[in-house]
Image 1 (tube, rainbow, N blue to C red):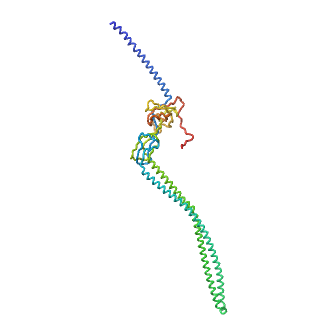
Image 2 (cartoon, helix red, strand yellow):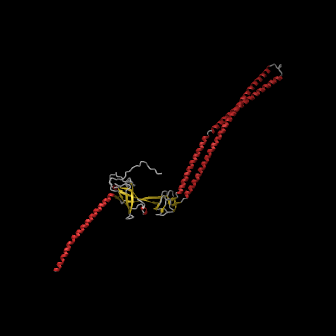
Image 3 (cartoon, helix red, strand yellow):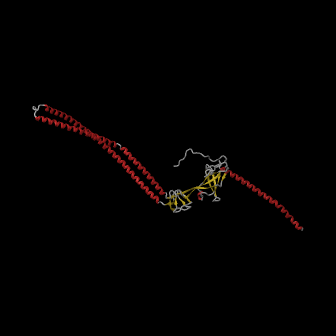
Length: 426
């Protein structure tokens, strides 16, 4: 019994010493943890002072829709989903028979318009030549008519002179006859009386004849003057040649307008025919292909989309995070699809407005039920170098950017400004 009690004493002493040792180790571990938390908190604080990050960010890119410009039935689909295509690649073809018929019709209408234009131009030349010839003939006719008037007036003057001579001769012969008739018949031979009577009758007849000549000459003068008036009217009509030419030229202008209209219709028909062959507006990878052969497409109906390789990051930072953010600041970009891989980038621009402000239904805070919510500001971040081009970075992929804002408390985003002179792209 004495041996057992002697051996039990050291065991109890060991049991009394162990809790003190464990307590010391626990305190040491607790101290280490506290120090680590303090160091971690300090590091986090220092990091937070120099970096701004968000998980509300994603890859963005240009997704170009491919749609039909004309209606028609699909004959062929020449690409598949996720196929890489170059700009201008033919992706589909529509039935072109209707458009070919319209093109032929437009060509025929254009040819008809050209023919009418040539006819109108020829009419101008003919009108110019005819009016010049008519004016020359009319002027010559007036001169000839005036010469005829002068000749007829000369004939009238001669006829009137003959009348005067015939009247004198008739008066003389009538006086002679009267004397013979008053003389005693026994003193004058009957033969002389008869001769005087015959001469008087002849003079009277001659007077009547020349008087008729005067009447005829007066009529001839009147007719000649009427012809002068007629020829002068012809000259006046011929002098309207410039107006006739102007009228013909207006027909040419109308025909030219018809040709331009027909040409525009022809160009439109050619364009519509070319639209039956649908090409890719840009290069990239096909996505969301939604057409099949035999399907009828409407104008503007989407066929597929082409995702371009150029991508960037659209990060929605809280408005309290952009206090010291500026364009050009470096960014570390983590992509969820590639754990452990970090890409480099820079802040390209900061949107002049919150995302909610440009939403389909922007909030209206004038209702009296206003609740303040921290808003998000879209920030565009572009990748540095070409390393990102070796990875599949598609629009919509989740990323987490870390912006190096630094410790400068005075820096802030650039305000909205209007350039001194607008740049017009050619």
